[in-house]
Image (cartoon, rainbow, N blue to C red; front, side):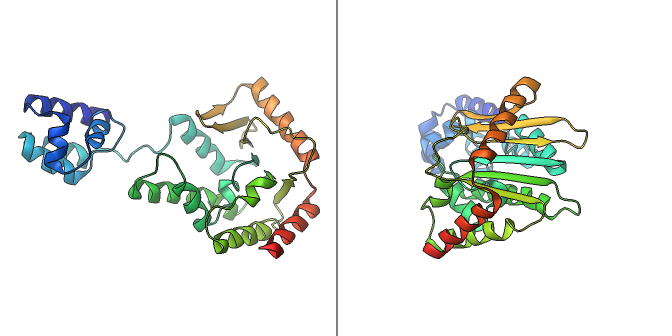
Length: 261
């Protein structure tokens, strides 16, 4: 993407056109051209073909787009985490803002992704949604991993999406809570103790018994393999499980939330 962006910028300058002039000729925003040239936005085939005509690049840009590898949706360390997630032996996940991605219904996941700022483009949104839902295949594995989730109650009370979307999401959580390989606990809003105030994270055990952790924040995501740092997160998760409602009380809370909706 960066290489094609530089090629576009070079061809534009050689043709004596400014970014605003090219944007006007293509009937797109100035920011679109700037983003493409900086490699932050994918050059689409229809725009590449029109640029080839306007800039006399003789099909070079269109050929580049056609032969561009499938776009990397995630940094390499995120892809590594997701590769390990697919084959994990155990997975422990704490979330505070939304229902954990592995437990999201399609409609709920779409609503969460639609609330991103800056917003995803339509095509990108569909790709991100597909990738999120594909990760849920580990729930259907012949030998599924042992899964533990601790969810802070506000994530269940979040009023995004329609009432029907929220109800179906709560109902699905209640169904998943009955799976023999899943432990779902809710950390209640009125708990005086909260070991997860620093934000959500996940810890997994690989088939060769290596322990990895993954964290997300407003500043980005991080794969954690350093044993000491993983140990800190493991201790936090152990404490969260003691502070959360037990499995049966958590199911009861979900039942009450379903009754109140």
